[in-house]
Image 1 (cartoon, one colour):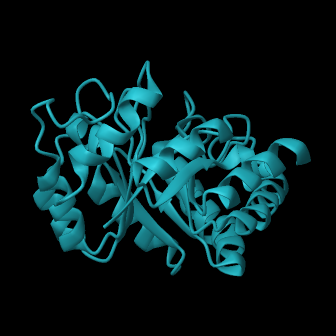
Image 2 (cartoon, rainbow, N blue to C red):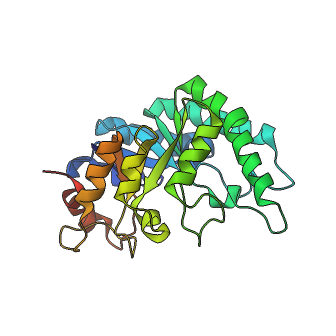
Length: 255
C-alpha cells in the first residue's frame, strides 16, 4: 500500500508531506484546469524539489459544470477535463476522484433514473475517452447522504463504474463516507478489482487519524490490500497541519 496526503493547491505543504514519509500528494482538479501559469508552476516546482508526484486529484468538477439536470454542457465538460488532464500529466497524474456532489446531485423535480442515465453517459462518452487518451483512471466516490442524493454506497459506485464500461472508470472507497453509509470492510473485500483508490480519516469527526484515537485503521488498510487497491490518501481536517501530518501516517501505515 502506498500512502498520500491531500494538500489542496497549497505548495507550502509539500515539504512536510515529503519529510513525513508519504509517497505522493493529492491535490484538486481545479489546480490543473483553472489555476494560472504562476500558481501551477510553483506547485510543480515544489513537487520536483522534494521528488514527489501529484498522482491523484479530487474535486473533479465544479458545481457549475452539471452532469445531471436540464442544462448539461458537454462541450464545456470535455474542454475542462481535457485541460486538466493534459496539465496533470506534467505532475505525474494517475487518478481523478469523481465525488463532485454539486455537479452530479439530482436536481429538485428531476427524475433519479434520468440523472443516473446522464451520469453513465457522462462517464462513458465524455470523461472516459479523455481519461483513456492520458492513461488516467477516474474513480467514482460514493458520498454520504447529507452530501449527495445519488451514489452513496460502495456497491453503487462499483455498479456505476461497470456500466461506464471503460478500463479508465473504477471506484473509490472513503472510510469516512463508508462509516456514514454503514458499509464495512467485508464490502471492500468483495469489490476486488473494482477499487483503485481510497481516502481515510477519523470516521466520526473526519479529523486526521492519530495513533491514540482508538480507531483500528489497520482493518481498513488490510481490506483494501485484499481488494487490490494500492493507494490511500489522508483526506481529513485539522487545525494544525504541521502537528498532525506525520502522526497520521503512523496511525494508518502497517508495520
